[in-house]
Image: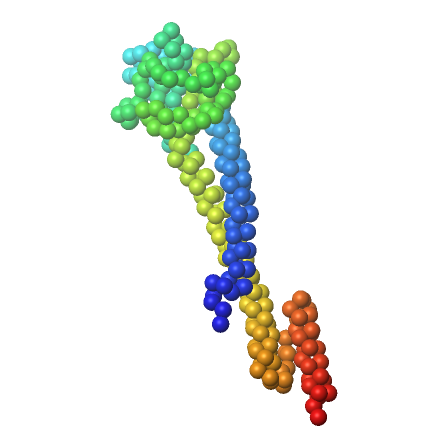
Length: 269
């Protein structure tokens, strides 16, 4: 009896599963990479769209006029409450804020969480590490190409210019989305891809196993017949019927048995 690890069914199944794993693995790497890139681009487009819409709701003249110490003025409180309502209305928005350029650099003006959260920025607080995309936001709506990390965490941000009544840019609105949410989306898609791959491998392995089992059954039947002939038993009936190479072998084997019987009859006295 052939050991299971030497069996053709084992070898065929393992060979096909390895082949499928290689093909599926390469497909998953390409698909997941392309999906991650597309998802990131979609997120960037969402941020640009959100920032652009929110920018149209902000009064650019008031934004330009706000100075450090104005956090208690009705104008500041009204704009802060407006931004906070927008921030809390969308689960996609982690932080929402406005900024402008001064001689000190790019500074915060109205933070949606000022006075609500302890970790918020006041008017005139300098943003120490402005990116090229943030600077570009004073000209056109734009999103960060990569995640950025600061004291508020790791985020991907979008910016859009805020204009006054004459169309002059007086600042920008910034919209932050948590990197965790984007990564969760990527992980969800990745898990779906892996699940589909595993299901496909499982189904393929079952199909290969079934096909291999029928082949082994017929090969064993032919082997049993050969064993009987080797012991002198010529009353062997080959019952294997297939339309493939094993079927051809069974037909040849059956003819060989018939020929041996005729030869034995001719040689008998």
